[in-house]
Length: 123
Image 1 (cartoon, rainbow, N blue to C red):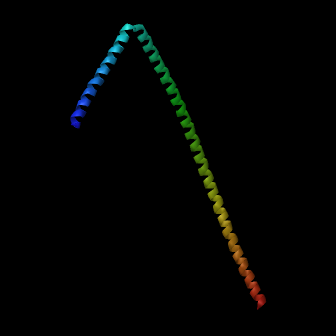
Image 2 (tube, one colour):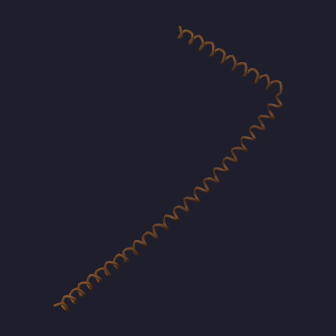
Image 3 (cartoon, rainbow, N blue to C red):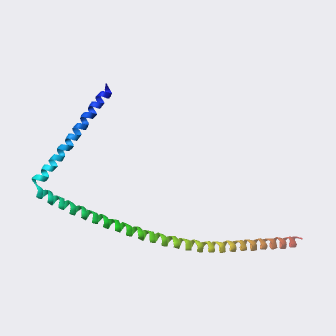
């Protein structure tokens, strides 16, 4: 029962929708025939408006592309600077590490000498 009702409703709905579409097409055709000058002017305006809209969109797109290129160039510059600074600091860190190691060895040597001197005096 429900399936038959659904088929009937779908059939009626399809016919109704098609009839409304045809009615709208006829109204549009009548309007075009009744006022051809107005339709012509509207079509001209619509075409002009669309072309202006497209030009504006193209201009905005070019601006965004320019900004993207500038940002990409800045990013590359910053990355190169970061690499340069990173390598500089690696060299500095290596030098400081070597200096710390040298100083630790010197301190250890001085402590050994001090202990030996204390042991000699105690003996």
